[in-house]
Length: 110
Image (cartoon, rainbow, N blue to C red):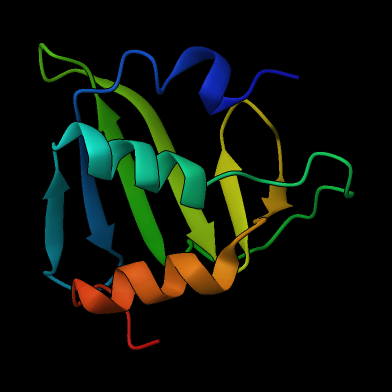
């Protein structure tokens, strides 16, 4: 199974983090913060994938140096991450820490 660590994060230059249904947007471009966010978005591939019928809560648009979107990741129910290459969501390894990260940036209520 392909993971963002295998294919996306090596090419990531910025990430637009968008709270769905809100006008709140954060842009992450600092290398250290990108690495932190990549770690917070790690999922448990040993668990069964699930399918949520909602649109998701937060989108992470990962962009390369040219500004092209190379991955569109969606957080569901503050506990699972979806990438169109997976066909379902996998549970986050550090969901509480990601919620704290998002709350500090005004992208979710925590």
